[in-house]
Image 1: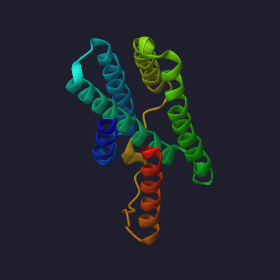
Image 2: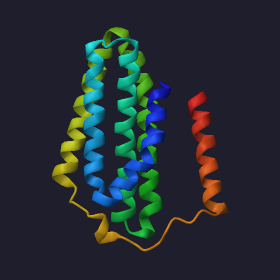
Image 3: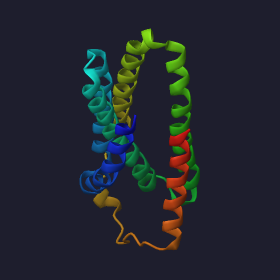
Length: 171
């Protein structure tokens, strides 16, 4: 399980930086594709090391999809509606995390193959939807000259996020 989160933590910053350079849509679609392929890999019964590697690949795909999604909200949603947009995006992420274990419990071990397949199909369909429906938004078109400023407020938000993640992970 932790290989997913480790890969996600390690890759979010570089993938966010890459998205700023090439656009966030390719990062989002690539993340969904990687997640889909990794999910199908579980059908091959790859052994212990393979499971760790596939889970890390899922984390890498999730990192790309998550960081690109949040970045796109920052680019395309007007500032007066961003708080609501971010809350909907984060709530949907939490809803998926809440429903996933329930689905796994209901499917049982014998139904894991079906869950992996459904996950791969869902990720692929989301990627296709992004390609078809989301206009290409170049980061350079919406670039600001503002630089990230590390101050007490940002540090507080980071600490709160880490504590929330720790509580969620321990649970």
